[in-house]
Length: 163
Image 1 (cartoon, rainbow, N blue to C red):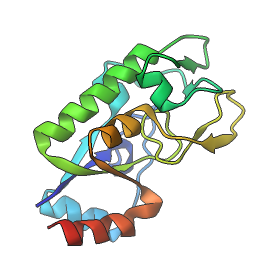
Image 2: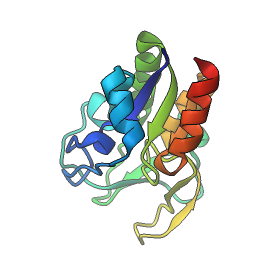
Image 3: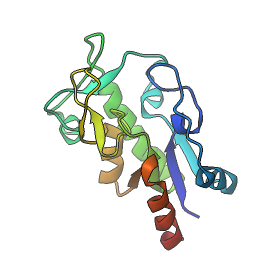
Image 4: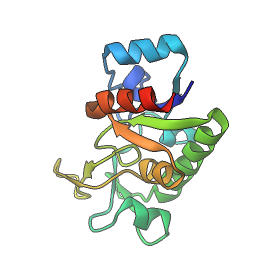
């Protein structure tokens, strides 16, 4: 049985930067929880960041790949540089996938760690841009298939063909 890493905020854990959850309700999530497939993770808290914490974004003009390669950084709303923590969270996410033998991940769109196709634009304006979060990129680089909640049906189809 394939396990699925899941952004902990999607299953009700209050780990987001603002101390809230982003709880998702879907019959597949209930089914997978009952089957013991779900492996919750929050890259930021695994790296030791507090909840709540300052909002962070990948700096304008940089990508998750740049951050992981040391060519880009993150900035937070208070002017800090949480890049090292985000890189550590990405590393720990990959380690979690390996230890738990998770081949799939269901992650929170828009997050600087977990975004799958959209992230904040790096200006704290509320605008989004195409891109992925640091942990999502690291997981993909490690061979984990990463999905957004909007793609849960596609993840279900992949599980059907992978089992």
